[in-house]
Length: 165
Ligand code: FES
Figure 1 (tube, rainbow, N blue to C red):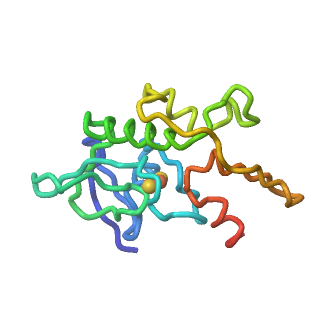
Figure 2: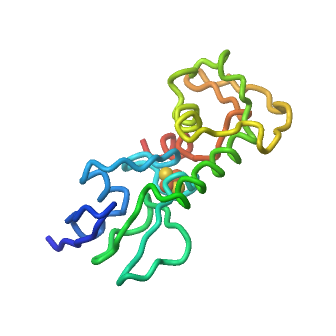
Protein backbone atom coordinates (compact mmCIF):
# COMPACT_ATOMS: atom_id res chain seq x y z
CA UNK A 1 0.00 0.00 0.00
CA UNK A 2 1.36 3.41 -0.96
CA UNK A 3 1.62 5.94 1.80
CA UNK A 4 2.00 9.69 1.98
CA UNK A 5 3.94 11.71 4.53
CA UNK A 6 2.71 15.03 5.77
CA UNK A 7 2.84 17.17 8.89
CA UNK A 8 -0.14 18.30 10.90
CA UNK A 9 0.62 21.00 13.47
CA UNK A 10 4.30 20.12 12.95
CA UNK A 11 3.68 16.46 13.85
CA UNK A 12 4.84 13.99 11.18
CA UNK A 13 2.01 11.74 9.99
CA UNK A 14 2.10 8.79 7.59
CA UNK A 15 -1.18 7.60 6.09
CA UNK A 16 -2.34 5.49 3.15
CA UNK A 17 -2.68 7.31 -0.15
CA UNK A 18 -6.25 8.43 -0.65
CA UNK A 19 -6.78 9.58 2.93
CA UNK A 20 -8.18 13.05 3.42
CA UNK A 21 -6.56 15.58 5.74
CA UNK A 22 -9.34 14.85 8.23
CA UNK A 23 -8.60 11.12 8.18
CA UNK A 24 -4.88 11.83 8.58
CA UNK A 25 -5.59 14.11 11.53
CA UNK A 26 -7.77 11.46 13.15
CA UNK A 27 -5.02 8.89 12.67
CA UNK A 28 -2.69 11.25 14.57
CA UNK A 29 -5.28 11.99 17.29
CA UNK A 30 -5.56 15.61 16.16
CA UNK A 31 -9.03 17.04 16.46
CA UNK A 32 -10.59 18.95 13.56
CA UNK A 33 -14.23 19.97 14.11
CA UNK A 34 -16.86 18.82 11.60
CA UNK A 35 -20.59 19.18 11.08
CA UNK A 36 -21.59 17.83 7.68
CA UNK A 37 -19.09 14.96 7.63
CA UNK A 38 -20.49 11.53 8.52
CA UNK A 39 -17.96 8.74 8.20
CA UNK A 40 -18.57 6.53 5.15
CA UNK A 41 -21.96 8.17 4.57
CA UNK A 42 -21.60 11.88 3.89
CA UNK A 43 -18.44 13.55 2.69
CA UNK A 44 -19.48 16.57 0.62
CA UNK A 45 -17.52 19.48 2.10
CA UNK A 46 -20.66 21.53 2.66
CA UNK A 47 -20.44 23.17 6.07
CA UNK A 48 -16.86 24.58 5.92
CA UNK A 49 -16.33 24.07 9.66
CA UNK A 50 -13.36 21.76 9.09
CA UNK A 51 -11.25 24.40 7.31
CA UNK A 52 -7.49 24.25 7.84
CA UNK A 53 -4.48 26.21 6.63
CA UNK A 54 -1.73 24.48 4.68
CA UNK A 55 1.57 25.03 2.97
CA UNK A 56 3.73 23.07 0.60
CA UNK A 57 7.44 23.55 -0.10
CA UNK A 58 7.38 26.42 2.38
CA UNK A 59 4.72 28.29 0.43
CA UNK A 60 1.20 28.79 1.81
CA UNK A 61 -1.60 27.34 -0.29
CA UNK A 62 -4.17 29.89 -1.39
CA UNK A 63 -7.20 30.00 0.86
CA UNK A 64 -8.23 27.53 3.51
CA UNK A 65 -8.89 23.85 2.75
CA UNK A 66 -11.87 21.73 3.75
CA UNK A 67 -10.09 18.93 5.62
CA UNK A 68 -12.92 16.42 5.12
CA UNK A 69 -12.53 16.41 1.32
CA UNK A 70 -8.98 17.63 0.63
CA UNK A 71 -6.52 14.76 0.10
CA UNK A 72 -3.54 14.28 2.36
CA UNK A 73 -0.63 14.96 -0.01
CA UNK A 74 3.02 14.12 0.20
CA UNK A 75 4.92 16.99 1.85
CA UNK A 76 1.83 18.94 2.86
CA UNK A 77 2.08 20.94 6.09
CA UNK A 78 -1.29 21.44 7.71
CA UNK A 79 -2.22 23.78 10.54
CA UNK A 80 -5.52 23.21 12.27
CA UNK A 81 -5.69 26.06 14.77
CA UNK A 82 -4.20 29.26 13.33
CA UNK A 83 -5.94 32.62 13.93
CA UNK A 84 -7.23 32.55 10.31
CA UNK A 85 -8.69 29.07 10.81
CA UNK A 86 -10.37 29.99 14.08
CA UNK A 87 -11.80 33.21 12.60
CA UNK A 88 -13.15 31.30 9.61
CA UNK A 89 -14.82 28.65 11.76
CA UNK A 90 -16.35 31.26 14.04
CA UNK A 91 -17.79 33.23 11.13
CA UNK A 92 -19.13 30.04 9.56
CA UNK A 93 -20.86 29.10 12.81
CA UNK A 94 -22.30 32.60 13.14
CA UNK A 95 -23.68 32.39 9.62
CA UNK A 96 -25.17 28.95 10.28
CA UNK A 97 -26.84 30.30 13.40
CA UNK A 98 -28.16 33.33 11.53
CA UNK A 99 -30.57 30.98 9.79
CA UNK A 100 -31.33 28.80 12.77
CA UNK A 101 -34.07 28.70 15.35
CA UNK A 102 -32.02 29.40 18.47
CA UNK A 103 -34.51 28.29 21.10
CA UNK A 104 -31.93 25.87 22.42
CA UNK A 105 -33.28 25.51 25.95
CA UNK A 106 -36.58 24.07 24.73
CA UNK A 107 -34.94 21.97 22.00
CA UNK A 108 -34.98 18.23 22.42
CA UNK A 109 -31.28 18.16 21.42
CA UNK A 110 -30.20 20.71 24.07
CA UNK A 111 -26.77 19.72 25.46
CA UNK A 112 -26.52 16.96 22.83
CA UNK A 113 -26.08 19.24 19.84
CA UNK A 114 -22.88 19.43 17.79
CA UNK A 115 -23.69 22.95 16.58
CA UNK A 116 -24.38 24.20 20.11
CA UNK A 117 -21.16 22.62 21.37
CA UNK A 118 -19.02 24.20 18.64
CA UNK A 119 -20.74 27.58 19.04
CA UNK A 120 -19.82 27.57 22.73
CA UNK A 121 -16.28 26.39 22.01
CA UNK A 122 -15.65 29.16 19.47
CA UNK A 123 -17.32 31.89 21.52
CA UNK A 124 -19.88 32.57 18.83
CA UNK A 125 -21.94 35.72 18.93
CA UNK A 126 -25.32 34.31 18.01
CA UNK A 127 -26.72 37.72 17.09
CA UNK A 128 -23.94 38.90 14.79
CA UNK A 129 -26.12 38.18 11.77
CA UNK A 130 -29.72 38.69 12.96
CA UNK A 131 -32.12 35.96 11.90
CA UNK A 132 -35.69 35.76 10.70
CA UNK A 133 -38.43 34.25 12.79
CA UNK A 134 -38.99 30.51 12.18
CA UNK A 135 -41.06 30.10 9.02
CA UNK A 136 -41.32 26.36 8.40
CA UNK A 137 -43.99 24.01 9.69
CA UNK A 138 -42.62 21.03 11.58
CA UNK A 139 -42.93 17.92 9.42
CA UNK A 140 -43.88 14.93 11.59
CA UNK A 141 -45.74 12.90 8.96
CA UNK A 142 -43.15 10.13 9.04
CA UNK A 143 -43.35 7.63 11.89
CA UNK A 144 -39.52 7.66 12.00
CA UNK A 145 -38.36 11.24 11.59
CA UNK A 146 -39.51 14.61 12.87
CA UNK A 147 -38.12 17.27 10.57
CA UNK A 148 -37.81 20.87 11.69
CA UNK A 149 -36.36 22.90 8.82
CA UNK A 150 -36.06 25.92 11.08
CA UNK A 151 -33.03 24.14 12.51
CA UNK A 152 -31.63 22.76 9.27
CA UNK A 153 -28.00 23.72 8.54
CA UNK A 154 -27.97 22.05 5.10
CA UNK A 155 -25.37 19.50 6.15
CA UNK A 156 -27.26 16.91 4.07
CA UNK A 157 -26.49 14.15 6.56
CA UNK A 158 -30.15 13.17 6.86
CA UNK A 159 -30.44 12.98 3.08
CA UNK A 160 -27.28 10.87 2.73
CA UNK A 161 -28.29 8.58 5.60
CA UNK A 162 -31.76 8.00 4.13
CA UNK A 163 -30.28 7.37 0.69
CA UNK A 164 -27.28 5.25 1.63
CA UNK A 165 -28.08 3.35 4.80
S1 FES B 1 -17.07 18.77 7.79
FE1 FES B 1 -15.82 19.44 6.16
S2 FES B 1 -17.06 20.83 5.12
FE2 FES B 1 -18.39 20.05 6.67
